[in-house]
Image (tube, rainbow, N blue to C red; front, side, top):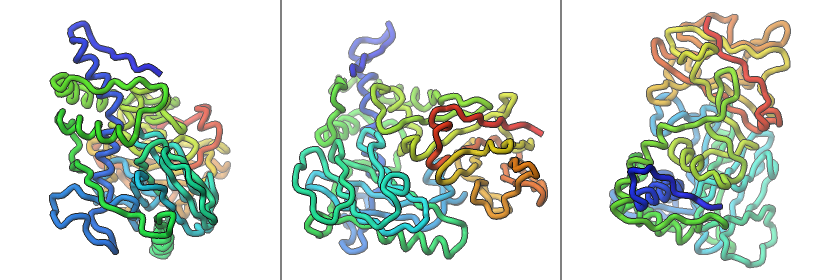
Length: 427
């Protein structure tokens, strides 16, 4: 694959090359920023990675967990999932393979999605791929060629030394189930091949809270270090390094362009799919960069899809001043092998909206979900409670919003973009 620099007639070749280089390497930088943001400062046994609170030292090869569903009070993550709890780890394979032990998950949906440093979701452990039994997974980097120990169920070869593991466990909204899920999360652990502690300290070199375009010196240093551990894919021509001055000019421009150009895949009925990847972005460097800027951590469509609606059937932006209905005809509900849910977010900040019902999503697991006599399904989206005869998803009064229809283990018609998504009709 060749990455051809594209620049206007008013740009010098060095500036055009710098823009192409930023577009190509931005996923690598954003993944390193996520590593800084999501790795732990404190290990429960080994203590703090550094006594200096301003330090960028963090623990790798160590899982952290959230034991509750995200709500409107959580503001760190945009467009958050309200259906699962999360487990998170960054693997550093430079010192050898890491073993991941996972408990028997019973009948629960769960997945560990593995992303390489270029945002490719290259492997999974979980219900869809390896089942729910107790299992041990060996993850190794490209330089390792040793024997696989006894007792290993899955072997995953990572393309580079850095791997982001994003775990999701489905939960129901009652304390007993949350406690059961938390116990399962605590059963997820990492070890070296000899059974010793896998965790060690690394200097991430970044402030994970910063979301703006970085300065050129920091960007260059981060990319140089990350490239040494995570080479560009075979067949892709690397547009790096570039002139420092041109890089400084290109960074804010490319970051802003990628923020504005989401370019979703249209699905009909006002629905669109912001992210459509399977295991690898391939030659689509531009889409890889857009996703890294706006939807980092996205899984492949075999595991999950996230159709999004920002407009109604007439193309008008969704607004809580109006009432809407989403109607699935009999036999035409989302087709999934795990679960589906419809979640509402305020458009201004992409966060969940506080409401008196404390309801942030409606899906196939909602207790008391109402269906018509013909087995059709309708969902009212509005600010005012429509009454007990309706399935209600509360909207923010007088504010614009958007909807995400999450599909876990979507069936073939969804994955082939043939499913007829119903439009949102304003009442």
